[in-house]
Image (cartoon, rainbow, N blue to C red; front, side, top):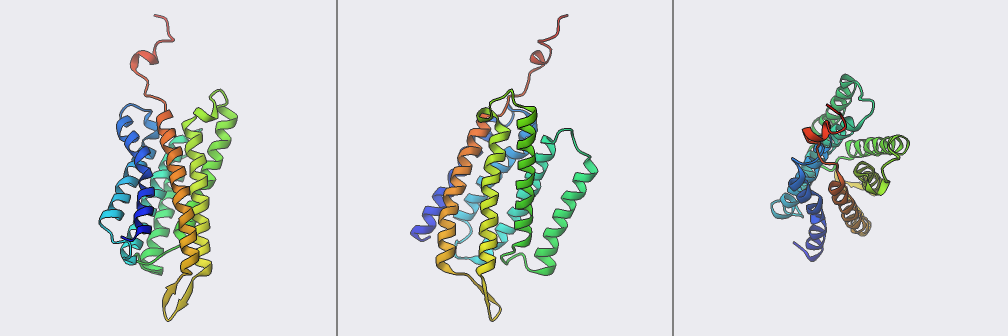
Length: 234
């Protein structure tokens, strides 16, 4: 690894904060947050895989890892927003949406292009969807959960971080695609531009991981049987 690769890898391990807290709290907190907890844990495992197993300069390996992780990220966070949706939406409707996402991923990575190449359509699409779901959830929280301070509301903090993270991700994907040049079948990017974009992305990821970690610490605990009936007199 170059000095720059080591620096980026070190910052990427900021995901260890929410992941470790998720492991510690997994069985104690509200089950409605479990998809997000799984997401943080798998994200840490993936960062370790990228840092210690996949050579940073191996573009095919990095593209393969990214494309597989994008599908996981889309589906697990999609499941999280399904659990948060109030009133609970139709399962068939959300199941069809998840199926469309998966079909789109398969088409782009195995039909239109190759899974070992940098593919942008699915990445931008699911990022945009997650931003929309986050905005909808925040609107619901503000209108219906005003009794809880937003700074102490785990769901609000997670959605805020998700908006920041995936808006920047869309900016990265679209900018790289817009400035890419295809020379004799090889896609080339402006190295200076890409370097600057990812230098900022490192800090954006670290900031969002900090917010995710704080949010996990604020997730409501599961209610015991005694707590469920403490407001009833027998």
